[in-house]
Length: 163
Image 1 (cartoon, rainbow, N blue to C red):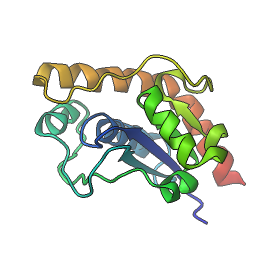
Image 2 (cartoon, rainbow, N blue to C red):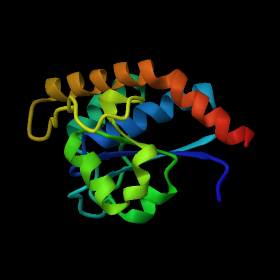
Image 3 (tube, one colour):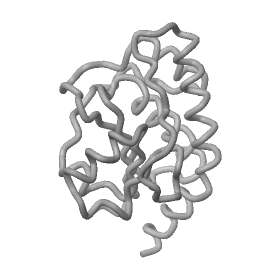
Image 4 (spheres, rainbow, N blue to C red):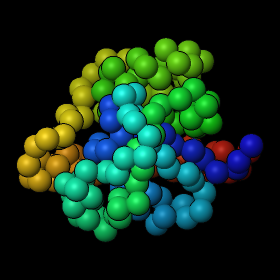
């Protein structure tokens, strides 16, 4: 078992929201805890191997995130089991995580609720098919939440690394 703390973001197609969150958190953690985490993403209705959308790639440049090498992947039980923390963009994503692996309840959260474990709450809206400005707004929203959650994520990383 890896000593790295593994974070999994989950959305629908794994080409917009979850890759942007993955890239943003990777940037933050490289500053805070370099080499101590693995950040991944998947989608509940994702096909394998698709790139992030062009607008997601462009929006992520706000934080110098490079999503150009992203390849989509479907959510699978093994990913859920390997993750130490799972952050879902909407309630339907959390429902699917828990359907696949019911024992993941203690480590799976609705993104905007983290670290509160409530199953229902506000969704990070999907920008798919919308203008670049909407993607930029989504990326900024994700970044603001990640900034708020970063101390708790870092605490969890430190806990695992010490264990």
